[in-house]
Length: 350
Image (tube, rainbow, N blue to C red; front, top):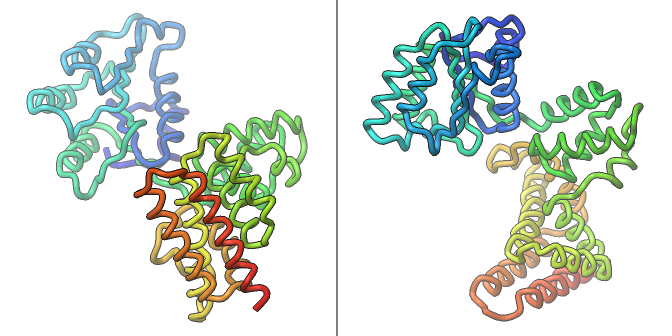
Protein backbone atom coordinates (compact mmCIF):
# COMPACT_ATOMS: atom_id res chain seq x y z
CA UNK A 1 0.00 0.00 0.00
CA UNK A 2 1.29 3.53 -0.72
CA UNK A 3 1.87 6.57 1.47
CA UNK A 4 -1.48 8.03 2.54
CA UNK A 5 -2.70 11.41 3.76
CA UNK A 6 -4.15 12.42 7.11
CA UNK A 7 -7.65 12.46 5.58
CA UNK A 8 -7.24 8.92 4.23
CA UNK A 9 -5.94 7.71 7.60
CA UNK A 10 -8.95 9.28 9.31
CA UNK A 11 -11.30 7.37 6.97
CA UNK A 12 -9.54 4.06 7.65
CA UNK A 13 -9.85 4.58 11.40
CA UNK A 14 -13.53 5.56 11.18
CA UNK A 15 -14.38 2.52 9.02
CA UNK A 16 -12.20 0.08 11.01
CA UNK A 17 -10.45 -0.70 7.74
CA UNK A 18 -6.95 -1.34 9.04
CA UNK A 19 -3.70 -2.21 7.33
CA UNK A 20 -1.26 -4.60 9.00
CA UNK A 21 1.32 -1.86 9.50
CA UNK A 22 1.19 1.88 10.13
CA UNK A 23 4.25 4.10 10.27
CA UNK A 24 3.54 7.66 11.48
CA UNK A 25 6.27 10.30 11.41
CA UNK A 26 7.05 13.93 10.60
CA UNK A 27 7.67 17.32 12.15
CA UNK A 28 4.18 17.76 13.59
CA UNK A 29 4.62 15.58 16.67
CA UNK A 30 1.23 16.52 18.08
CA UNK A 31 -0.48 15.10 14.99
CA UNK A 32 1.71 11.98 15.06
CA UNK A 33 0.75 11.22 18.67
CA UNK A 34 -2.90 12.17 18.15
CA UNK A 35 -3.40 9.72 15.29
CA UNK A 36 -1.25 7.03 16.87
CA UNK A 37 -3.56 7.10 19.91
CA UNK A 38 -6.66 7.04 17.70
CA UNK A 39 -5.30 4.02 15.82
CA UNK A 40 -4.46 2.23 19.05
CA UNK A 41 -7.89 2.93 20.55
CA UNK A 42 -9.74 1.62 17.50
CA UNK A 43 -7.45 -1.30 16.58
CA UNK A 44 -7.44 -2.68 20.15
CA UNK A 45 -10.49 -4.77 21.02
CA UNK A 46 -12.93 -2.59 22.98
CA UNK A 47 -13.38 -3.89 26.50
CA UNK A 48 -10.47 -6.31 26.16
CA UNK A 49 -7.65 -3.85 25.66
CA UNK A 50 -5.62 -5.24 28.56
CA UNK A 51 -5.33 -8.49 26.63
CA UNK A 52 -5.11 -7.15 23.08
CA UNK A 53 -2.77 -4.20 23.28
CA UNK A 54 0.97 -4.04 23.94
CA UNK A 55 3.19 -0.99 23.78
CA UNK A 56 6.97 -0.81 23.50
CA UNK A 57 9.47 2.02 23.76
CA UNK A 58 11.66 1.54 20.70
CA UNK A 59 14.68 2.88 22.58
CA UNK A 60 14.56 0.03 25.10
CA UNK A 61 12.56 -2.90 23.67
CA UNK A 62 14.28 -5.82 22.01
CA UNK A 63 13.10 -7.24 18.70
CA UNK A 64 12.34 -10.65 20.14
CA UNK A 65 9.78 -9.13 22.54
CA UNK A 66 8.16 -7.16 19.72
CA UNK A 67 8.07 -10.28 17.53
CA UNK A 68 6.44 -12.32 20.30
CA UNK A 69 3.79 -9.64 20.83
CA UNK A 70 3.01 -9.43 17.11
CA UNK A 71 2.70 -13.20 16.74
CA UNK A 72 0.51 -13.74 19.84
CA UNK A 73 -3.14 -14.38 19.05
CA UNK A 74 -5.81 -11.88 20.19
CA UNK A 75 -8.09 -12.84 23.09
CA UNK A 76 -11.76 -13.13 22.09
CA UNK A 77 -11.30 -10.50 19.39
CA UNK A 78 -10.65 -10.22 15.67
CA UNK A 79 -7.29 -8.56 16.12
CA UNK A 80 -4.82 -7.06 18.56
CA UNK A 81 -2.67 -3.94 18.38
CA UNK A 82 1.06 -3.60 19.02
CA UNK A 83 2.51 -0.08 19.23
CA UNK A 84 6.20 0.85 19.11
CA UNK A 85 7.21 4.45 19.77
CA UNK A 86 10.51 6.01 18.70
CA UNK A 87 12.01 2.99 16.97
CA UNK A 88 15.23 4.39 15.51
CA UNK A 89 15.60 2.19 12.46
CA UNK A 90 18.75 4.04 11.43
CA UNK A 91 20.52 3.14 14.68
CA UNK A 92 19.62 -0.57 14.83
CA UNK A 93 22.35 -3.18 15.02
CA UNK A 94 22.55 -5.49 12.04
CA UNK A 95 20.97 -8.38 13.97
CA UNK A 96 18.06 -6.21 15.13
CA UNK A 97 17.62 -4.75 11.65
CA UNK A 98 17.39 -8.25 10.21
CA UNK A 99 14.90 -9.28 12.90
CA UNK A 100 12.76 -6.23 12.11
CA UNK A 101 12.72 -7.23 8.44
CA UNK A 102 11.52 -10.71 9.44
CA UNK A 103 8.76 -9.25 11.65
CA UNK A 104 7.50 -6.96 8.90
CA UNK A 105 7.66 -9.60 6.18
CA UNK A 106 5.46 -11.99 8.14
CA UNK A 107 2.88 -9.82 9.91
CA UNK A 108 -0.24 -11.85 10.74
CA UNK A 109 -3.71 -10.67 9.73
CA UNK A 110 -4.66 -10.71 13.43
CA UNK A 111 -2.34 -7.84 14.36
CA UNK A 112 -2.10 -4.13 13.61
CA UNK A 113 1.44 -2.89 14.18
CA UNK A 114 1.74 0.86 14.78
CA UNK A 115 5.22 2.40 14.69
CA UNK A 116 5.41 6.14 15.37
CA UNK A 117 8.13 8.70 16.04
CA UNK A 118 7.66 11.31 18.77
CA UNK A 119 11.20 12.32 19.71
CA UNK A 120 13.14 12.69 16.48
CA UNK A 121 13.00 13.15 12.71
CA UNK A 122 15.07 11.75 9.87
CA UNK A 123 16.00 12.76 6.35
CA UNK A 124 13.86 10.50 4.20
CA UNK A 125 15.64 11.57 1.01
CA UNK A 126 19.25 11.20 2.11
CA UNK A 127 19.23 8.49 4.77
CA UNK A 128 19.44 5.20 2.89
CA UNK A 129 18.40 3.06 5.87
CA UNK A 130 15.22 5.04 6.46
CA UNK A 131 14.55 5.25 2.74
CA UNK A 132 14.69 1.45 2.53
CA UNK A 133 12.42 1.13 5.58
CA UNK A 134 9.82 3.45 4.02
CA UNK A 135 9.84 1.40 0.83
CA UNK A 136 9.31 -1.81 2.82
CA UNK A 137 6.62 -0.26 5.01
CA UNK A 138 4.69 0.98 1.99
CA UNK A 139 4.68 -2.51 0.51
CA UNK A 140 3.41 -4.14 3.70
CA UNK A 141 1.17 -1.41 5.12
CA UNK A 142 0.96 2.38 4.99
CA UNK A 143 3.13 5.32 5.94
CA UNK A 144 1.66 8.65 7.02
CA UNK A 145 3.96 11.70 7.06
CA UNK A 146 2.80 14.66 9.13
CA UNK A 147 4.82 17.43 7.57
CA UNK A 148 5.15 20.89 9.04
CA UNK A 149 1.96 22.91 8.71
CA UNK A 150 2.03 26.49 7.49
CA UNK A 151 0.93 29.24 9.86
CA UNK A 152 -2.25 29.67 7.81
CA UNK A 153 -3.08 25.97 8.29
CA UNK A 154 -2.44 26.22 12.03
CA UNK A 155 -4.68 29.29 12.29
CA UNK A 156 -7.47 27.39 10.52
CA UNK A 157 -6.91 24.40 12.82
CA UNK A 158 -7.11 26.63 15.92
CA UNK A 159 -10.40 28.13 14.68
CA UNK A 160 -11.86 24.64 14.13
CA UNK A 161 -10.73 23.43 17.57
CA UNK A 162 -12.29 26.48 19.22
CA UNK A 163 -15.64 25.67 17.58
CA UNK A 164 -15.50 22.12 18.93
CA UNK A 165 -15.13 23.60 22.40
CA UNK A 166 -18.17 25.87 22.00
CA UNK A 167 -16.22 29.04 21.24
CA UNK A 168 -15.17 31.03 18.20
CA UNK A 169 -11.94 32.81 17.38
CA UNK A 170 -11.19 34.84 14.28
CA UNK A 171 -8.22 34.04 12.07
CA UNK A 172 -6.73 37.38 13.10
CA UNK A 173 -6.96 36.54 16.80
CA UNK A 174 -5.68 33.00 16.17
CA UNK A 175 -2.64 34.57 14.52
CA UNK A 176 -2.36 36.95 17.47
CA UNK A 177 -2.32 34.01 19.89
CA UNK A 178 0.34 32.17 17.86
CA UNK A 179 2.55 35.27 17.79
CA UNK A 180 2.53 35.19 21.59
CA UNK A 181 2.82 31.49 22.45
CA UNK A 182 4.58 30.21 19.33
CA UNK A 183 3.51 27.79 16.62
CA UNK A 184 4.12 24.49 18.38
CA UNK A 185 0.75 22.75 18.02
CA UNK A 186 0.65 21.22 21.49
CA UNK A 187 1.52 24.51 23.17
CA UNK A 188 -0.99 26.40 21.02
CA UNK A 189 -3.78 23.95 21.84
CA UNK A 190 -2.98 24.16 25.55
CA UNK A 191 -3.32 27.93 25.36
CA UNK A 192 -6.55 27.62 23.36
CA UNK A 193 -7.96 25.25 25.99
CA UNK A 194 -7.28 27.90 28.62
CA UNK A 195 -8.85 30.67 26.52
CA UNK A 196 -11.97 28.56 25.90
CA UNK A 197 -12.30 27.72 29.60
CA UNK A 198 -12.04 31.42 30.46
CA UNK A 199 -14.50 32.51 27.75
CA UNK A 200 -16.99 29.70 28.37
CA UNK A 201 -18.84 30.20 25.11
CA UNK A 202 -18.93 32.77 22.34
CA UNK A 203 -16.08 34.73 20.81
CA UNK A 204 -12.54 34.75 22.16
CA UNK A 205 -11.63 38.42 21.90
CA UNK A 206 -8.28 40.06 21.19
CA UNK A 207 -8.30 41.40 24.76
CA UNK A 208 -8.70 37.88 26.14
CA UNK A 209 -5.89 36.62 23.92
CA UNK A 210 -3.55 39.40 25.08
CA UNK A 211 -4.37 39.04 28.78
CA UNK A 212 -4.51 35.24 29.06
CA UNK A 213 -1.95 33.85 26.60
CA UNK A 214 1.43 32.99 28.10
CA UNK A 215 4.15 34.67 26.05
CA UNK A 216 7.08 32.53 24.98
CA UNK A 217 10.65 33.83 25.01
CA UNK A 218 10.41 35.09 21.44
CA UNK A 219 7.28 37.11 22.16
CA UNK A 220 8.73 38.60 25.35
CA UNK A 221 11.97 39.58 23.62
CA UNK A 222 9.91 41.04 20.77
CA UNK A 223 8.24 43.26 23.39
CA UNK A 224 11.75 44.15 24.54
CA UNK A 225 12.82 45.16 21.01
CA UNK A 226 9.69 47.32 20.62
CA UNK A 227 10.47 49.11 23.88
CA UNK A 228 14.08 49.71 22.79
CA UNK A 229 13.10 51.10 19.38
CA UNK A 230 10.44 53.28 20.99
CA UNK A 231 13.02 54.69 23.38
CA UNK A 232 11.03 53.41 26.38
CA UNK A 233 14.04 52.68 28.55
CA UNK A 234 12.09 52.04 31.78
CA UNK A 235 9.92 49.45 30.07
CA UNK A 236 12.90 47.86 28.31
CA UNK A 237 14.83 47.38 31.56
CA UNK A 238 11.71 46.11 33.33
CA UNK A 239 11.23 43.43 30.66
CA UNK A 240 14.91 42.49 30.84
CA UNK A 241 14.65 42.18 34.60
CA UNK A 242 11.62 39.92 34.28
CA UNK A 243 13.48 37.71 31.83
CA UNK A 244 16.34 37.31 34.31
CA UNK A 245 13.89 36.58 37.15
CA UNK A 246 12.46 33.79 34.99
CA UNK A 247 16.00 32.37 34.61
CA UNK A 248 16.19 32.91 30.86
CA UNK A 249 19.72 32.42 29.55
CA UNK A 250 21.42 35.69 28.48
CA UNK A 251 22.73 34.02 25.32
CA UNK A 252 19.17 32.97 24.41
CA UNK A 253 17.82 36.47 25.07
CA UNK A 254 20.52 37.97 22.89
CA UNK A 255 19.94 35.45 20.10
CA UNK A 256 16.24 36.29 19.89
CA UNK A 257 16.88 40.03 20.13
CA UNK A 258 19.48 39.78 17.36
CA UNK A 259 16.93 37.86 15.28
CA UNK A 260 14.43 40.71 15.66
CA UNK A 261 16.96 43.21 14.33
CA UNK A 262 17.95 40.87 11.50
CA UNK A 263 14.28 40.67 10.52
CA UNK A 264 14.17 44.47 10.31
CA UNK A 265 17.37 44.57 8.24
CA UNK A 266 16.15 41.93 5.80
CA UNK A 267 12.78 43.62 5.36
CA UNK A 268 14.49 47.01 4.93
CA UNK A 269 16.71 45.61 2.18
CA UNK A 270 13.73 43.94 0.56
CA UNK A 271 11.60 47.10 0.53
CA UNK A 272 14.47 49.21 -0.79
CA UNK A 273 14.85 46.74 -3.65
CA UNK A 274 11.21 47.07 -4.61
CA UNK A 275 10.01 43.80 -3.10
CA UNK A 276 7.45 43.05 -0.39
CA UNK A 277 8.16 42.48 3.30
CA UNK A 278 7.67 38.72 2.72
CA UNK A 279 10.49 38.47 0.16
CA UNK A 280 13.02 37.12 2.76
CA UNK A 281 10.93 33.94 3.11
CA UNK A 282 12.41 32.85 -0.24
CA UNK A 283 15.93 32.88 1.16
CA UNK A 284 15.62 32.27 4.90
CA UNK A 285 13.66 29.84 7.05
CA UNK A 286 10.55 31.72 8.18
CA UNK A 287 8.24 28.73 8.09
CA UNK A 288 5.37 29.44 10.50
CA UNK A 289 7.09 32.71 11.47
CA UNK A 290 5.94 34.93 8.63
CA UNK A 291 4.33 37.28 11.17
CA UNK A 292 7.82 38.33 12.26
CA UNK A 293 8.39 39.99 8.89
CA UNK A 294 5.08 41.82 9.08
CA UNK A 295 6.08 43.12 12.51
CA UNK A 296 9.52 44.10 11.20
CA UNK A 297 8.01 46.03 8.27
CA UNK A 298 6.72 48.76 10.61
CA UNK A 299 10.15 49.32 12.18
CA UNK A 300 11.94 49.03 8.82
CA UNK A 301 10.02 52.06 7.52
CA UNK A 302 10.89 54.13 10.60
CA UNK A 303 14.64 53.62 10.69
CA UNK A 304 17.50 54.01 8.22
CA UNK A 305 19.80 51.25 7.01
CA UNK A 306 22.89 52.79 8.71
CA UNK A 307 21.01 52.86 12.03
CA UNK A 308 20.03 49.18 11.72
CA UNK A 309 23.61 48.24 10.79
CA UNK A 310 24.98 50.16 13.79
CA UNK A 311 22.53 48.27 16.02
CA UNK A 312 23.64 44.95 14.55
CA UNK A 313 27.28 45.89 15.29
CA UNK A 314 26.34 46.51 18.93
CA UNK A 315 24.56 43.16 19.08
CA UNK A 316 27.62 41.41 17.65
CA UNK A 317 29.90 43.04 20.23
CA UNK A 318 27.59 41.89 23.01
CA UNK A 319 27.52 38.36 21.57
CA UNK A 320 31.33 38.21 21.59
CA UNK A 321 31.41 39.59 25.15
CA UNK A 322 28.88 37.04 26.41
CA UNK A 323 30.68 34.09 24.88
CA UNK A 324 34.24 35.07 25.74
CA UNK A 325 34.05 36.84 29.11
CA UNK A 326 33.66 35.51 32.63
CA UNK A 327 32.24 38.81 33.80
CA UNK A 328 28.69 39.80 34.74
CA UNK A 329 26.55 38.62 31.82
CA UNK A 330 23.59 40.68 33.03
CA UNK A 331 25.74 43.81 32.86
CA UNK A 332 26.61 43.00 29.23
CA UNK A 333 22.92 42.97 28.29
CA UNK A 334 22.13 46.09 30.32
CA UNK A 335 24.93 47.97 28.55
CA UNK A 336 23.67 46.63 25.21
CA UNK A 337 20.18 47.99 25.88
CA UNK A 338 21.67 51.42 26.65
CA UNK A 339 23.57 51.40 23.35
CA UNK A 340 20.57 50.25 21.30
CA UNK A 341 18.27 52.86 22.87
CA UNK A 342 20.88 55.57 22.26
CA UNK A 343 21.24 54.51 18.61
CA UNK A 344 17.47 54.54 18.09
CA UNK A 345 17.03 57.94 19.80
CA UNK A 346 19.94 59.49 17.89
CA UNK A 347 18.19 58.45 14.64
CA UNK A 348 14.98 60.25 15.70
CA UNK A 349 16.86 63.46 16.59
CA UNK A 350 18.70 63.43 13.26
